[in-house]
Image (cartoon, rainbow, N blue to C red; front, top):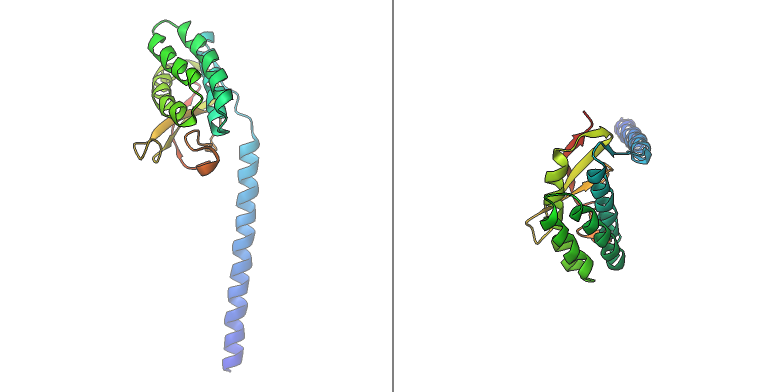
Length: 176
């Protein structure tokens, strides 16, 4: 009787274990499908769209921990910001990033740059897509840092490959 009871429990546990694996596989494939959908963002104001596009290029360079690419994209972003009235101080921050080849310094300045650009784009008239405001609580020695992304999936510009997925979506700026 004890053997039959033991076999019944073992069979039940194995069946539950298999069910958990199947549900995990389903979740993973769903996640991949959702991540592969391209979120194209369109902003009515062409100057704000240029700023956002150049900003995303800079963010992606920092995600890849590519200091040289970050310098180049920050220089382009600086020009976009300088062309937008009221963004001259933010253009100076982009110039600081463009002037440095040190990732630590670039990422520190990226925090201030991001705060300014987030404030600018919260009032933008988005025609299509979603802009994700993302947050890493560990950035800047625990002070945290925000950034913008066209993807819901977290790709952390403050740590690159060290902690690529550290962070969360804090807000979504959507088309109206």
